[in-house]
Length: 157
Image (cartoon, rainbow, N blue to C red; front, side, top):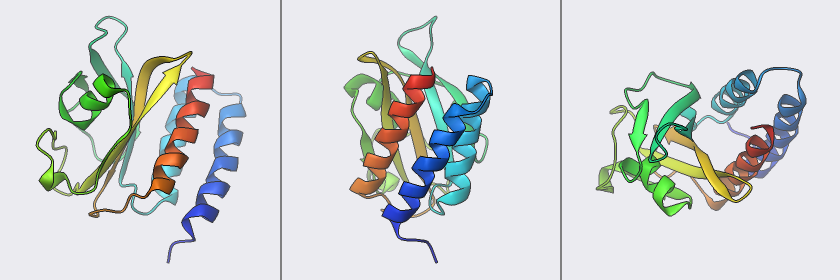
């Protein structure tokens, strides 16, 4: 049985603070964050970062991730949930991907998705993408938690 969400998220915030302070490369820190989230939150089945491509500012490129490999290593702005978040610069929660018109399928196992933008000095630089094999697992608590992580990640980039 999973711990109470708020208790788990509070514990993970402390662990993520520790990971961010580690003497490690930015890439290793991001990889460790994705690994921690996937391992500790049972319904986070795929956890990854997408960042704005510095050579094509209208495209996202896949960063560190944990979970099944994805063919979506580059996503044009506006395409799929991740691409829509890049356009809207606001979080998107899809509780049932079968009901979403603008959805890029990574796997038949994926039933829901939450994507939270990352900003640095007010500019959109990337996003955290979470896929779940459950329908409707995400709550407002998840969004608040992931926004906190997005802020911590922006500080280390």
